[in-house]
Every structure is written in structure tokens, then in C-alpha cells.
Length: 224
Ligand SMILES: *Cc1c(COP(=O)(O)O)cnc(C)c1O
Image (cartoon, rainbow, N blue to C red; front, side):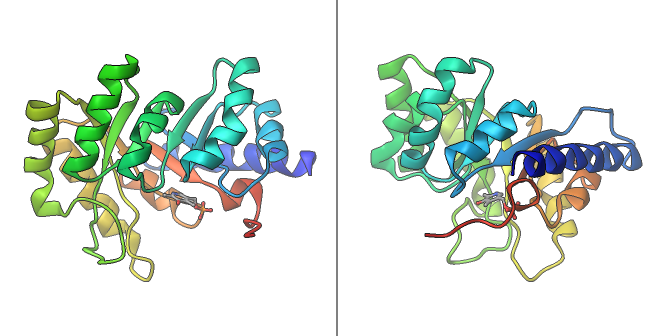
């Protein structure tokens, strides 16, 4: 298992480097977020031993169980929340995560701002955009994005540093990635989080600054 994760990480890094080069992007300009949801602490430890410092989790409780203790011994860790966040868990999320990628509604912006004032912690924020306008998916609708960002800034004092998306499952992701990139550029947001195991090279071609990869690194998720 140890060898697997180290090996997968090396080949993933090589593929990211190749995709950067093919896209004319600077070497090292794309950050790898290792998505460790549903995988045990031991898998995260193996990835850390192989040099990975940046991780993504979908749930507050699961992230807490794995990363609170790991942080004690690995101060360089950077943990991203990439799953939907309930408003009543905002305070816990602010304490736990370095980056929250799933800001998607005014009530959450308000709860995060309040938690930041109370804790003095300011995780970096991304707004999730529902590019496919899918009813079952979280995210701000494209036409509501400008207004939402303005509200975050002017009413809550929140600074947003990027956009995040999960394109519709059955569709070609490339045009969606291009759209997200164009939105970020228009809004002068430096970061774009897009691309998963099956499409991260496409995302890099379309301008991703970070890719979120789980299966290609840790293997299939053991659902319980
Ligand atoms: C699970 C998940 C990923 C990783 O997906 P893989 O296909 O396993 O690489 C990326 N982003 C989000 C938001 C996820 O929930």
C-alpha cells in the first residue's frame, strides 16, 4: 500500500508537470490537492511521507478526525474543505480548514464572517459555481455570481480568492472549465479549482491553478 500511494503520487506529479508544459504553463503553477475523503488516516500518512502537504476533505467531522492530530506533527499541512458546508458547522470549519472552497450562499457567507470575527482565523475562500445549473448540485448560478461576490465583500467583509466547480457528469468538461476560467479572469480572481482524477489534464489545459484528485492517488474509495 505504501508503495502504491508513493508511486501514484509520483506518476500524478509527472502527469501534472507534462500537462503544465503542454499548456505552456509555468512548471509548478498547478497545485495538487489530494482528496482523502473516505480514505483512512494511514493513507493520508503515506501521502505525507511521500511529500504531499495539501489535502481535500468533504466533511467537517471526517477532516477533524484525521487532520487535528496530524497537524501537531506536520505544521506545513494545508487542508481544504471541498464538500458542502452546513451553516451550523461554519465555526468548526473556520477553526479547522486553511481553505474553504464551497462558499455558495449568503447565509453561509454570514456565518463564516461571524465565525472569523469570533476566532480571529481567516481561511481562504473560494466560491463554488454551479456551471451546469444542476438542481441537485451546490453552487452559485453563473448569473448570480457578480452580485454574490459583491455581497460577500461589501456586506460581510469576506475576500474571495478563487472559483471552484464540478461540471455535469455526462458532459465534456472542457467548455465548463473554460467558462470558469473566464469568469475568474473577468472578476480578477487569481485561483481556479477544477479537475478531478478523470479530467485534471483537461482542466490544466483550460487554466486550472489547482486540481482535486482522489481516486488516481488513493485508489477507489471504500464506501462504508
Ligand atoms: C471526491 C471529490 C474529488 C476527487 O474525485 P476523484 O474522481 O476521486 O479524483 C474532487 N472534488 C470534489 C469536490 C470531490 O467531492
